Length: 64
Image (cartoon, rainbow, N blue to C red):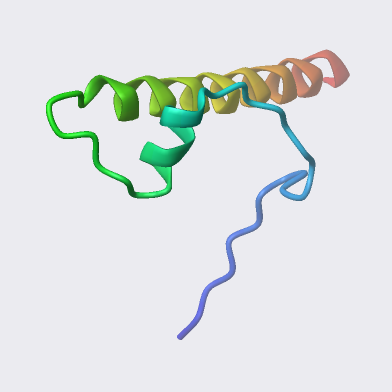
């Protein structure tokens, strides 16, 4: 059985500023001895996601 996941405004574009190394790390290239590159990139992505969901939740609360 397939279930569908609906993500509100899932096609909306966001901008994340990454260094070339961070982009490469997210694409799967390994930087042996420097795991911080991938960690930094993932933190930036998570920060943008959290920001977006905070804004959406605040907008919904204002409507109620």
